[in-house]
Image (cartoon, rainbow, N blue to C red; front, side):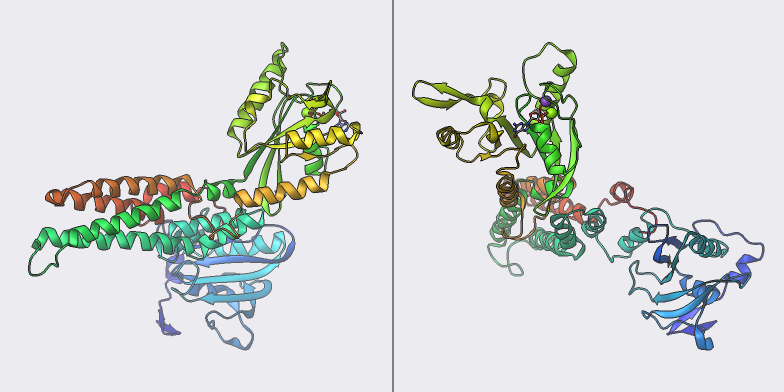
Length: 490
Ligand SMILES: Nc1nc2c(ncn2[C@@H]2O[C@H](COP(=O)(O)OP(=O)(O)OP(=O)(O)O)[C@@H](O)[C@H]2O)c(=O)[nH]1
Ligand SMILES: [K+]
Ligand SMILES: [Mg+2]
């Protein structure tokens, strides 16, 4: 037995390697490549578990023959094969002594050269150690969760941070990883539990010497406060969920208005087919974009019109569905197409197929302004649709105003920088539990003091519902679904 930084180390692996094989469950020390495989500057191999220090002893050689690591400090080293002693690479190693590590266990990180042969030689060497096994997808994070280092909202945040493509997604995810979301749910839950404790005290002792008067009314008042707090969280126009999964923006309009031209302009490439033939687009075509730091999934759709063509008919049906499922609908109209002459000048005529779909929230782009010369015509258009943008996808006129204006409007609608901090709810899972917490609090409020045992039960359910968000309660069945999207090494 040896002592390393106050930790007892029992060297067992040599024994284990002679003949005995350990089951996967016994091999509690896991390893994996935590950086993308392939050529690059540095690859990080992470090892976590009770034998991380033994891995160091078996495979890390520091200059000056000091055998043991100084925890939390990067040290230059040679990596060797534990059995053949072959020199595998030069690199850096750092030992994190649990619980001050990502997983709360002892963790060893080997920073080596990122080359395929180097990586596989070190992974093979780790595989030769009888007490180690390859980590499963998300297993490091799962251990961090089980060790109490992260709650479920932080685990989800970590996953979102890795998947974040835009600034708003990064900020939203970082708030969760940093424990901002966790703290608010923890606070909510402990306030409900304090309420419950008061009600239970009342059950045990009754109002009298030990218990102050009016405690039930106080609990009810606190429940009312909590209820309005949770309702506030729920009334977030689903901002968090929308940012997390991307804002769905559907382009729609009559045939030949320039919808596909607009998609190509936004994507800056020829993603969609553009022709002068009305009814060119049939299928929905999605392109993911970053507009003003917001994640937008733009869909091009078939032009809406009455048609007997069975393929186009399906396209029109799909277009309508895409608009109804979208977070933002953007209607493209051909300005010369809808501008009609009348005895007093001009008016705009919106096609019958479009009119029922337009709402107050619909963005409108009046395209092909290059084909309209008179200022009177343009004025008519601006009067008819004061919020609309006028542009030409052919000449580029008005397009920068359109992109800036749309970006700003989207920020006003979905951004959270200047509007009271990031939304708390980023998943339907959170919403469901908070809604059920609301129902239990309402039930508590509706229970008269004569039914005090029942009242306590409602509060207990409310606390449980909030606890489910953080993964304090009923966690097993959500864990697999949360971790299934993680990659190996995370
Ligand atoms: N003059 C002019 N032509 C344009 C403009 N924008 C698009 N077009 C042309 O209008 C025609 C139709 O454009 P598309 O982008 O295919 O229109 P669409 O709305 O996707 O049409 P469908 O998919 O058939 O519904 C093409 O020939 C484009 O080159 C514009 O601003 N000015
Ligand atoms: K077309
Ligand atoms: Mg098209």
